[in-house]
Amino acid sequence: MTIKSICLTVSLLLLCQTAYAEALIFISNQLDNSVSVINAKNQQVIKTITVAGKPAGVAVNNHTRQVYISTPEAGGFAVIDIASLKVINQVKVAGASLGITVDRKGERIFVADWYENTVAVFDSQHFQRLQTITVGRSPSGMTVSPDNRWLYVANRMDDSISQIDLKTYAIRNTTKVGAHPFGIGIDDKGQYLYSANVESNDVSVLDAAHLKRLATIKVGARPYAVALDQDGSRLFVTNQDDSTLSVVDTAKQTEIATITVGDKPEGISTDRQANRIYVANWFDNNVSVINAGTLEVVNTIKTGEGSRAFGDFVSQ
Image (cartoon, rainbow, N blue to C red):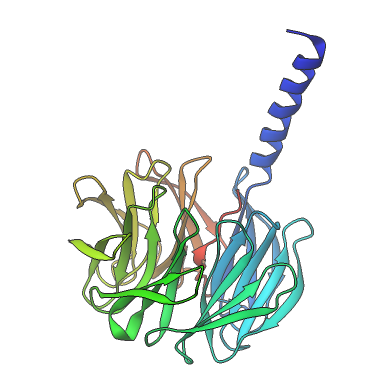
């Protein structure tokens, strides 16, 4: 190996280590009007950022190194710069923005408006509105397929999931699931879509291509949101009224364990580099950290009042 190749290898190794050291967790604290920023390596809150408008939803854009925080009472979303950890923009949407996500290329931001029954589409460079899509009643959780072709939207009051073509912004399919779907997720291969159904205490499993219903999995009381582990073999579901997580074997499509976390767990997201699951506990004002392999709670981190963090809140 030449000196040049050795230097290149060392540089890449250092770059990877630096990237891991800078992985951050963004937790919206709705009652505090703030966002807690947790360093994933040392498991400490390194900054609290003021965000007005009762912040709720979170979406990390790793391409632009920005984080988008939905602000329901302000009818829009705030833009946080990851490098400076400062709010650099406030974007107006309409009624009550809640669910928020980005496409796989980091080019478009999708904001679900709870009152207007729409999803607004913004470009991530200039924050100009590109489209407004009418969906079902009270849209909440959203996710984008790995191939960037489809946007999926949970329509809570219609008990359904809509599939939107991201080339035309037309709804291709709408399928009934359990009662009041809220948080949804998709596996890395784009095969399976998972919906946490708050009022029927279950998770719907759908074929992501055509939204065909494949299975219904009973979980705890008032499931709110879902997250998959590092390899997609386990699905984690926050159960609000049980103060637990349900752990689902995705191959067997059955619940295999429950984990006690804080009071009123809501938002959930995965640090895939460390294979840790982070859970925002609304009533306890903290975050539970779970080892996805051992299914043990390895840490509890104090955040702010009313921690919700609805969405994908881990920067990688």
